[in-house]
Amino acid sequence: MTRRRWLLMIRIILSVVVLTFLVMRVDLAQVRSQLVSASPLLMVGALALFMGRNVLQAWRWHHVIRAWQVQVPFSDLVSLIFVGASFTLILPTAAGGDLARWAMLPRDRLDRTMAAQTVFTDRLVGFAALGLLAAAALPWAWPMVPDLWARGAVAAMLPLALISLTAALRPGWIPSAWRCRVPLVRATAPWSLAPAGMAALAAHLISVAAIMMLGRALGDTTSPMVYGALLPLIWLLSMVPVSVGGLGVREGCFVALFSAAGMLPSTAMAVAGLWLLMTLIQAMVGAVVLLIWRRQSSAPTSEDDQRPTPAVIPAGTSQ
Image 1 (tube, helix red, strand yellow):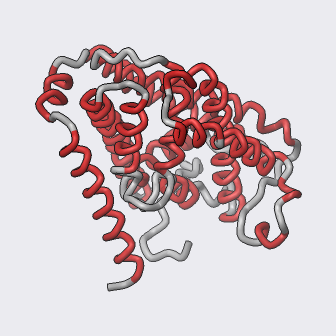
Image 2 (tube, one colour):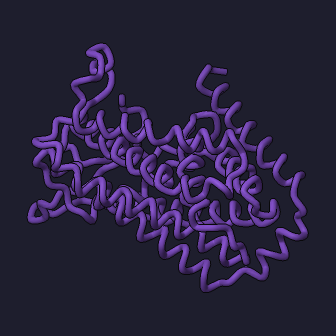
């Protein structure tokens, strides 16, 4: 068995072990009771917010790409965001959708290097907004987050935000040895990324509101500031490539951190389960989009139709 397959198996085992541990630590009967009595209206509202968040993420990426003076149809970017969500579930890290976005950007508009730079810069802008959101919410959530480790981890996200912002706007400070391996922004002007930053912050706020709405659907009354402070940390930790798609890490961190902040463990487990359900629904939408693209790419096209469509790189192609 190859090293890559061993690593994949280890990540799958880790996800299963963490989820099994969570299931054993909570009262499943109480979790089931809360899920059955959950408000369908609030859950539908949360799903709508998640879908809107994806559109905002595409808008953020759109403004990043414009910094290179390149235009890609916004509808294509929205579709790529949803397709990326489906790849996030099967790749080793929750950031795996970035690789899918890079692979499927139309090559007649952006070459491979430029496509990688736009995705990387988009991620840096997202990190910066994530850290700023956590830093802004932490002072208000401080009395409700008694765990010192959690306080320190959330506070450490502010330097992360500043580093990400500097790397996106002024990459010259990064050592030249790293520049050879990391695609850096070549934007025409630093302030051209300001709309992307605002879109990133708005998308994170919508995500916080969506997950908080899932909690409210179950009767949770945890302060919005606690959600705003802890969720960015959970998103960041779920990107560490130790599980498949962040599965298990995301749920385990949510239950541990929100239980420490006063949420009932059964409620935290139920919210984490609903969050996973919303993620699966978005991934299903992305899978449908991917299937449509495959059919379009394999179908004969008319010479009159000159509009390029994103094409999936065939399996085995060098990346």
